[in-house]
Image 1 (cartoon, rainbow, N blue to C red):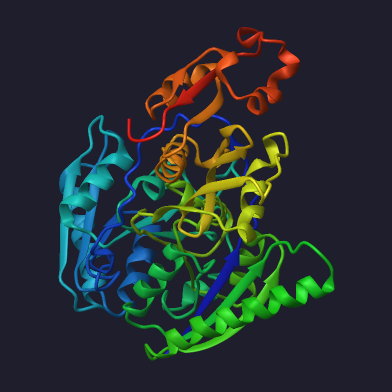
Image 2: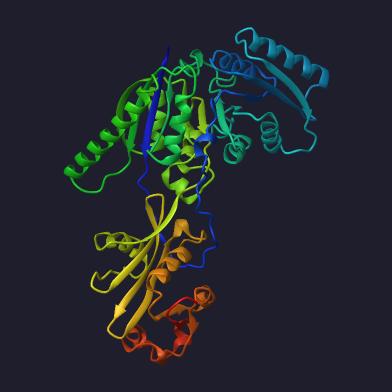
Length: 467
């Protein structure tokens, strides 16, 4: 059996807060049957939109050598530039025979008149109709483009609700040269798989263990950046080694041979370099990294970069985005989390003697906070702040709801930004005159000398108890 290489990459991304807490509502419930959403095999039903070119012939022969394909679906879309329908059907039948001469899986063939339809959308529709577990796309390097990913492939990669395998053709006739080592291999013989130990990465590993034909697994983690001295680097490497060992143990329980490697640098560069150094047959990676998943981005930055630059086939695994959202009051020893979010909010600092801080977590990442500060003469709400990457998802409202639930037995005061008056009104606050605020709360805006309109803030009050 060939080798399987898994490369794990970690991204240290800086997140920025968001000053607008008027986010819309968000569904915080993860699916109850997440494990059931993972297909029994990524090769259950393989859909290949063939253009009947020599490249597609090569792809079919390569796929046919892959064990575990249970059904293979060939589809060809006839355009105004295509050969006539009869000739297309004949060529498609020939490709079917090519596959069947190597693999015993049943093959279906279909031609469809594309007319003025959108090609990526039509492929995605066909995938849905076929209940495909994997879409295979042939990708050529453009003569005038540095990208190895076409626009159609990008759209399919971004919008598909299933896994996508992009087959490379770096040695098409206009490039010349001999076939690469990867092109001579079984495509599942030596795979590079980036992961950052996040939920989508772990779910992709579950998919991996259910894929036939897996040999050796090399777990490689790419450390992008470490703040601090050599001791900090040593601690980071030790932590990564520990996590890699845990992952290796889990994979070995599935009968896969595993070894681990750590690299340093930019994830995309290191993943592509590893594919070359290891003479890999394919890269397999999750569609999103941790921050992409938490921000609910349809295609992660690193995945997109690797798909654009790698010269070997890349299998992008699709998993549902259902992050777990939670809200809780921070302990004093966790106040630093709020201060990180407040960095761009006047570098606000916390005070353990007077503050109660409520934080919204997406998975284990703090994204939004709200503070109730106790003054000698009253309670003030401030510091309602959300990281910019997470704005527009209702997290600030959840932070405020947590604060009100815990502190609402007291009368609460605040200076609200004028355009957020309606937001705070929906939480039971009402506009008041500044003189109705406790004296210690008024101190914050003493410099305004009562010109609330000029400062674009509005004093507000929430009476104690339920509203």
